[in-house]
Image (tube, rainbow, N blue to C red; front, side, top):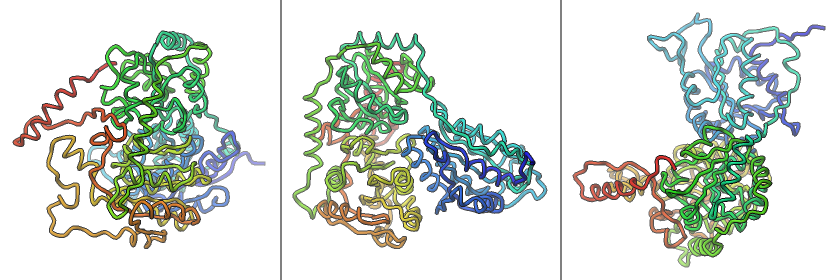
Length: 618
């Protein structure tokens, strides 16, 4: 019996991917999203067809958005499973680059198999080939290098014997997790090679849980025991570590308030007594007050980016900072005392070391005041004919969905509003805010529903973001993947308009349709547009109708799009501080130093005062 099998390189890749397994006995790579073109149709396309019974192929409408769906799937699966994406050699590949950057920033796994030029160079330059006048090795897929955790160019068929295991090693590494890119030369995809039969034996990929260093652990335990007013800031790493219940028990036993980042929100259910809400720029008054007063801030699985830290103004001078993180790079940010390790393992071991320690810093009254303010702000409006605020829309969705619904979004006004106002059960929140990529929402909702088919998925998207990328609605229709899109129409880029006018002192310009120097305002029929792709679409006249349509959507097996017009000026962090407990923390966005306008000069003076409170190292 031969110990080799003759296959093309592309066939060998798909055959190998089909037997890479998880501990639960499932494929780790749950299929490949594909738009075929010059550079992947003949090689990878043929291979996917040959193995379609054991490795599914998913057809997208746009390379970027199908990759967004793959990323949302991995996020929904808490990085325990992932998907692959293949593209052609030119614009198909560069379309995926934005999605790869999104995955890279958010530490989410995705396998990108990008078509590339001919390794043998015989027909060069081929269609869609990018030529560098001074470097013959450059191709369009080199754009993936800065946004990939692992990059490899396959120029010989035997290269996949090492490249594929290396790619999955990175994708399943909790510290270095992110996108892996294989730039696969199109002629090599079709070349045959005698591969070892042993290469195709099933392999189980296990995600490790690194234990902390004993010295680091002991130092942090002593810091906690010495603290009078500690606070925890919980990020996405808590969820990826599946440490939600561990954190819940730890915070409750030791009476430590928990503030949440965008990625960490819903690690604790909203009704957990130690959940003080969102942290930072778009944070709750309760959470930010606790952090301001803290003598010790404990980051768990967070990158501590600017929205979380109020651009380094939230954690006060004199407070100590600990960062528990799976990667030393993140753990050392802002001069923190680093504690490197898996969040669940670390919290379990810290709990043993600090014993019956109990902090006295949890202000239950502040938490209840914040929740009451949120309820009031999100309450049903009396006038159903008036345009609602974004908060009133969120309240209607909260009332019209099930307790286990997942709210998801990515960019615009809604991320800040949802972070502050949405009250989820555990796991009921999915936000892409590391890259805040407009256009993620619809495709992301589809990928999330594939990952969590038992839960109701609610996609919040503004009209601006919907216009950027909506075509995966057609994919969801043909695949019968049901989710609900709540499309809030404020006639433009309302969020960035507020940043331009309120945040930076500028004049309204080129964001809202009314400020675009055009004679005729566009009148876009979003209902007709969504319906044309096969979705069920309706325009809600008010929040009561929105609630009713949300309930009706649960009976369908296709996406539902509910359009509702909203007020453009509603914004957590401006007028909302006094109405829903938002603290309105500083966000550092550079203001022009020179201007002819007095309003701009006044805003610059305010900006100088604000940045004076920043700590370069906390």
